[in-house]
Length: 207
Image 1 (cartoon, rainbow, N blue to C red):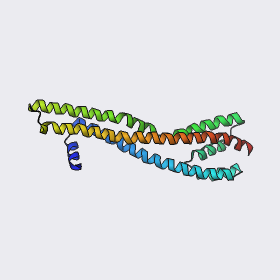
Image 2: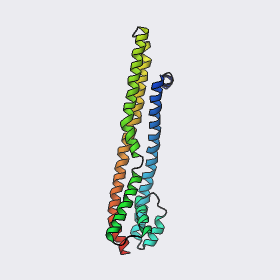
Image 3: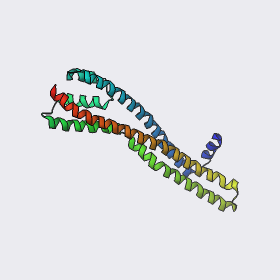
Image 4: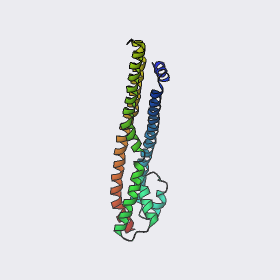
C-alpha cells in the first residue's frame, strides 16, 4: 500500500507534484512548530512554578531578581526581571503602564508561530482540493484521448486526486488541533500575567 502510494506520487503530473510539495512543506513546518511550542510551554509552566515558589519566600527584590535569572522562559519571571531592571517608573500608574507593555511582549512570545498553524489549518485543505480538481481534469483528458472510460485509464488520475486531498487534510487537522490547544495555553498564561502584574505592583512599591 505504501509502495503504491509512493509510485502514484512519483508518476503524478507536474502540477500535482507541486501541490504535494507545498503540502509537505506546510506539514513539516507545522510539526516543527508543534514540537517546539510543546517544549516551550512545558518549560514555561515548570519555570513559572519554581519562580513563584521563590517569589513567595523572598522578601528582598534584589535576591528575587538574582534568582529569576535562571528562569528565562517563564513569562512571570521575565516580566519581573524586565520591570525591576529598568527602574524608570516614578509612580504606581507609570509602573502599571510599564508592566502592561512588557506583558504584551511576553504575550507575543507565547503566541509566536501560532499564526502559521492557523494558516496551515485553513489553507491546506483548499490546496489539496486544487490538486484533487487537477487530478480529475487529467482523468477526463485521459478518457478523451483514449476514447474510453476504462478503469485502467481513470484510476491513476483519480488516485492522484485522492492523495492530494488526503495529504491536505493530514496537514490541516494536526495544525488546527495544535493551534486551538496552544492558543488556550497562551491565553491562560496571559491571564496569569495580568493577575501577577497587579500583585507585582504592590510588591515592588512595598520593597
